[in-house]
Image (cartoon, rainbow, N blue to C red; front, side, top):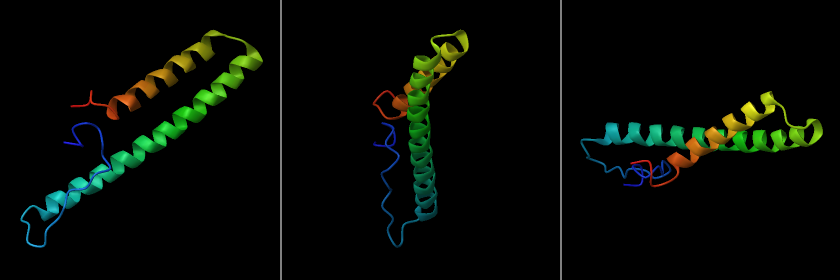
Length: 88
């Protein structure tokens, strides 16, 4: 259920004689990779947003900066999509 809600940090419990052990192990690895990538994207987006604020303050608004701001905001929205109940 947590995966369906966008929480890729949870693991599937593996039992010694479980026939689905390989599948569960692969799903756990995929979840770990997805979770890691989402965290990396979040950090990149946050630092980009902070840099954008400084650029706006120093140079004023222009079309290129506004396009960059829009793209950063869209990326943030996508990240939040995976972290909320909307991802089902």
